[in-house]
Image (tube, rainbow, N blue to C red; front, side):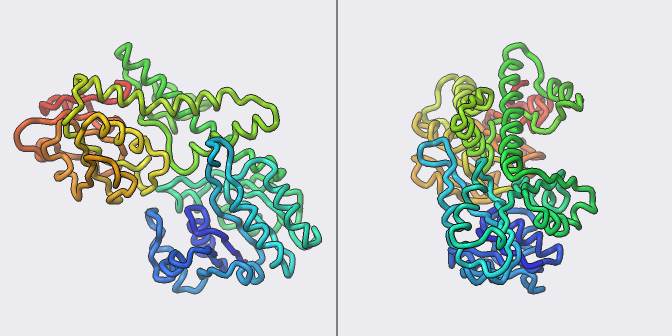
Length: 432
């Protein structure tokens, strides 16, 4: 099939490359000329394991092309995926849909034959209705179909999630589109993926409800971890005991710094905004947002206690600063509030992240990036394990230091407290 992916961000690029790898002809479109030029050279602007290899392979095989010409790309394609960003508005709550609607306005003048227009981006309920209105201003409804087909890709696991999805959700009231999309996703359905066909509005809400529930699980276990620290109980025992209940499940029950990234923060806000719009108080999700916002403050208070309230001139190392492992995504990472807060209190901070230097800290006083783990911990008073990269899971801390031993604050519970303390280190973790 001939596909057009509009937007070469995380969703559009990963989905487009994977569709090409399934044998489809895919055009990835973006108005950013530099990004398109880099992609043509096989250089991927985002960090995602395995993605570069697939880009090079499918570009060489001519199943994957890159373009800045949206109109031409739409005209030569059968299925159009809208994959542009839907960030939080400046009001801090609802989703900014300006990119979605701008793309719809460009598409409407390029419909030269029947087109299936799909929102792959995460959009609030009724967005599909608005796109349909925009397209109808210049086209008969018999010339196009607007479908919701949300993505469920985890950063760091995106290629696997696309190839072996739990479910494929297609929201449409058009049987013709349903037949085409079931055929498009046929190779994945044959491997066991559940194909869920529903209304367009239901598909839009499934995505938001899913992310809000996962964010709730993370926030819930973090609050239980706070209680565990007060009553000398190991949070990992609680997570295991809960997770074995099939109604609950073990995933997303790991205590840590709180959720971040490109999805959960903006999607939890957007669904509560939709609730308010339709006069429905989504109080549980609102509480989740508030609790997660306070998570960094709680952990910073713990740092203050660990250092006996003497942060000024202390050398603090952050191992990992991205919101999770296997991604270079800094969006809503808890390090973005922790590091500046510690800097304001007079701490001297070094960080090491496998994805390198972060411009987000370039203007923060007394913050520097290290090239190796060893370099980052030299002379440190406190080492904070912030992100659960594999690089940090088997560090021999003894071999890294000469002289005084630093304190370790393991925010991801990677290590055994007994083993680390046996090596002579002061060790603190979350909920243990």
